[in-house]
Every structure is written in C-alpha cells, then in structure tokens.
Length: 506
Image: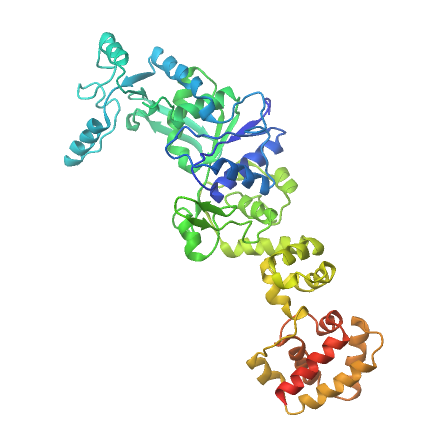
C-alpha cells in the first residue's frame, strides 16, 4: 500500500464490550499489523446520556487481556489526540458551520413535540415520516431552508434550540465501494437528512467520526455491519468537505448459535456462555455478567475463535497463533454473510490452548481457585496437572478430574462397585497389598512391571485386579493410569486406600 495504514477501533463507553466489538478490534489490529500500520483506540463518548463510568477502563483492559493493545489512544498519546471525543468537542462546531456555509447542511428548529406530531400524522395515513427533500421545504417544518436569513439569525440570536441537519441530495444515485461487499448503489431519495449537530452542543456520531477519521488520517474504516446503512451519509460528508474518503469494510454479524439473529447477552445467559471478554458488574442493576477471562478461557483461544467468525483463511487450518493470524489475515477473505457462534467450538479451542500451557503455570492457577490445595506443594500439583489436563477444557475442571490425588475417596461410585467388585476381590486386593510391600523401587515403571508380572504369573484376569484397584484408589472407574496414581499418592496411602475398600465392601 502506498500510504501508511492507520485504522481505528471506536467504541462508545456505554457498558461492557460485546465479543462482536472485540472481533472488530481484532480485525483492525490484524490488518494494521499485517501492513505495518497503526491501530488507534478512539473513545466515542459524544452521547453523554448513555455514558457509563468505568466502561472506558473496561474496554482498554479487555484489549490488553486479548493481547491486541492499541498503538495510540487514551494514555498512549500520539500526534493525533486527544482520543476521547468529549475532549475534542470544540472541533466539531466549526465543521458543522463549514457545511452550512457550503450549503451542504442547514439549521432546523423543529421541537421534539412537533416532530412527534408529524410522525403520528403520517402513521395515521399509513405513511412513514422522513425528514428530507420530500417535506423539508413545504412550510410545515421549521428550518433555515424555508426561513429567511434574517428570521434564521433572529432565532439563533434568541437562543432557540436547534440542530444542524445534512442536506441530502435529491434524484441522485450514489456509487459506493466496500472491500467486503463490493459495489453498492444507493438512491438518495430514500435517505433522510441526518442530524449532525445536536441542541446540547455535541456532534452526533456521524459528524464526529468523519471529522476525527479525517484529522487522524484513518486510511481504512473496518467496522460492524450495523453501520452499513450509514455508509451513504458518510461518503456524502467526505464529498461535502472535499476530503478523500478512507476505504470501508463492514464486517458480518456474529449470529446466535441457532444461526438466526444477532448474538446477544440473553443468548449467553440462556445457554450458559459469556458474550463479554471480561466479567462486568452493572452497578445500576446490581448484576454481574460473565466474562471469558473469569470463565477460564485463555486469551489465545478467544482471539483464535473470534478470528474465524466471519473470516476464512482459505485453508483447513484452524489453530493460529497471533503471529500466524497477522500473516494470514486478508479483508478480501472476510465473508459477507453472518457467522454462527458455536459455544462448543470455543471450548474446543480452549482445550487446545490448555495443552500448550506450562504445567507449573496451570498448577498455580489451580491452587489459586481451589481452597483444598492451600497447603499442597505447587510442584506436586504441577505433576498432577500433567496427568489430567488432557481431559480438561478449563482449570476449573481440574478438581473433578484430580481430587483423589489430594484426598482419600470417602464415597464409592455404586455402578462402579457393581461392575468391579466381585466375591474374590477382597482376597485379590489383600494379596496386592502384600505385593506392594515387597516393592522397594516405588516408581511408575517398576510398579507396572511388578504388578502386571504378578497378574500374568498367577493367571489372573487383568480386569479382576485393575478394576477393583482403580476403584480403591479413585472411588470410581475413571482417572489417569493406575500406576501414575499409585506413584503420586505414595506406597503408604496406596495400601491404606486398598485396605479401606476391603473393610468397606467385605
């Protein structure tokens, strides 16, 4: 690319960051890094009524946890700051005024009550009220297109509330381009005259994001599909200012697991999975929403599964490191259609990344969440983790898979007892205790050699020994290799557990 790539992620601090927003940030990040460009975070807080304290910090923490940090933004000031729109509000009025001077926008003095009356009147006649060429100059609406300059100025001097609306053209066809969706044609007659500047002195999203993208020299706008209806206005604003427009790419929706409709928090609550990167406490509602971090997902797995929601590398590869994603990412391989969210697939990714984690790090995490391990040496926990992590998707699965390494089973699985414990099991297990007593080299390899050799020599079925032995050690017919368990809990505890089951079931 001839120009230096600059992209931006521009969320509103109105609550927690949905994973759809995280994916938008990720695609911007991957595109920037692929082209040695800059990834900008801009906080679009022009809507002060919806502003939520702490939401900005949540957004930044989410990006950092996902290992997709921004290059410029709040706290990382570059040459294009400030990066909060509320701190840039003095800029926008001059651009709104410029559009009025150019005849591309106009003052509108209609009150909310008057506009509501127009809507209801249209609805009563089976029509839809649109503030545009069709009715803006018919005399029923109060704006500077129908008022004289003197009347308009008088209203402004009197301090009457007004908004500034874009003057959408009539009888034109816009030819727009989108990297993902190709050529798009729009009839301007169906467009309304969007508000660019509000009566509270703040710009709307439409004006502020165009001005900021231009001033911040954004080259590519990669954003969600929900902004596609705004593309026509944004292109027209660039033309009205005489600025070169960036390239646009509108990402497909992330769909519910059923494939019908946009993924929502309600879907996650109903089906038991998070839709936010981090847990979020809503102080107003006094609720806590689940997060991928707190649910035990690794950031690598979240990034990996999000990257494949809507983007197809064109190969069978599914596991990507961040570096591999950067190298492979191509906006031309992003799909137009929505991507169905699969909760089971997210667990599959986490299982994979679980296996790649260091055992000692997993052991530390395990010890942190499991009170029973407070006094247990982390090196021992690490050895246990190595034996059971292949069966786990999350660190929170570890206790169910390994509790018998840390405490003597107090309950026996009834179905396992019926299957494993026979009339002669007590006699056989008593002999196994005697055999264990003779083993001086109490290693996994030697235990296996000695016990299997003893079974073969005495022509006993392996199941008649190994099943009740596992039942004694675990309390059920599950778990890692029996000889690994015997070695880990030690000779004395092994004998004690076998003796316990003999006394319990005899």
